Length: 640
Figure 1 (tube, one colour):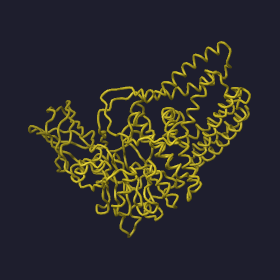
Figure 2 (cartoon, rainbow, N blue to C red):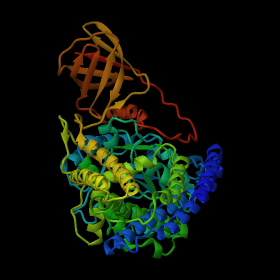
Figure 3 (cartoon, helix red, strand yellow):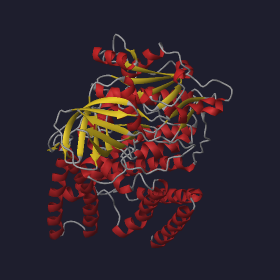
Figure 4 (tube, rainbow, N blue to C red):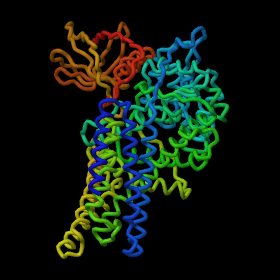
């Protein structure tokens, strides 16, 4: 046992150092880790308690199956990363003598606030692409007259229908009947494209076999963990949206995530349009296009920015929808039996399904140490030294793999925390879908506002129950240890195991303490210097714009300035006059809210906003195929 421990750890450390110095050798570490996993799995089979009663036997088998499931998932994860994604850059110049494709930009909405919709519409209108070769359409499934009028005012084509059959998929299919472009882009209502979105993506369609180009979902606001924990963390979705998607792209199995993507319309129509039988029509349409033999491209650049779910409740609603929709696709078109998919593509899509079932595995891991501490149920029949000798290479190998493959977006510890937070809720989602229990479709709210801090007790009720049981188990186990009725090694192991789980439960309780959210519309920090000049009572004041949103902006002046709240202000941007109202004035700080802006005025503001969009924690070096210089605009502001 000890010889194996020393030998395997030595091989892992050597291969880790080599992979760290040169990433092209990372497959050596992956292979050695696979060997450690297989050896551990074979050894664990002999540690199932066969002679400790029927309950111990059943729980021992369940734990072994959970571990086997986890190892298979980890095998799939490593397999995806064994092949490197090499994307050959394409630009509009690759169409050569041909005219660039006409692009219809579809913004899908149901009940989102008009302020958020207007930002998306104007950002889409600012795309740096020949103006006669693209058109923006708002696809409104809410059939709202005020949104129709908004589109008319700002020159956006308005598309609606008589019912909501097929939800978002039906909404897009309805639009496909009315548009005539070669390509169409899909944007969610809160997704703001940067000016170069089409420049960076359309060029890939110069290859006739490309069906869709996907860019990652990235966010300009803080997610629930970043906001409530006050930690400098990557967005929880960066792990999938940046790293996993790139790994999938190497095997032509990019997952369409419902937004931030561009499609060849003819190919989508050939597969029958967007499937309407799943609430995650995005995953289904992407998989069916790949099964039809078409190619998918992933451009790992921050080209479109959206809003993360900021509360526990909204996050659970979102993940419940994703979970049930994914399982619906698997039941209707099981990747293992979907004709046209390659083996690598099948593994990628099965891995996606296993992710949701891993929540059942996590709950087993939470319950098992408690069974021993409370009922003395033997689930592993081995000594602590034997277990450590076999388990340490298995565990340390996985930690090293995470360090090599995902150096910035995810660690083993934070993966554990995220899983503990969501597992009690997603287990219910899995069971509801497997039992065909119909649940109302929920849209994630993006305009939630709270003026006070509060505890989301209902969302962490399962975690509070688990914490109470764990603390009770600790007291009971300590008493049993003093009485000599349990083994010290087993006590130590299960105390550590349950303590590891408690750490994740504590994270869940922390994020349940919701901090106030004061603004419906997120403010964007201005990263470039934008000078401001204010004319007031025949005196000029100078300063610069510090933040901007779809509703107003904040200005920092070089000297003290006094005015009244509600005072009319006019901002001049390169000769364009913007009517605003002062909403806050504090010595050198001035906050203004826009008035009734004309389309060109709002487009000018959205150019400034989108050029300053960035993620809260940028962990990637975005590929720069070419540089694009944005001139800094000088603003003059006069107060009357």
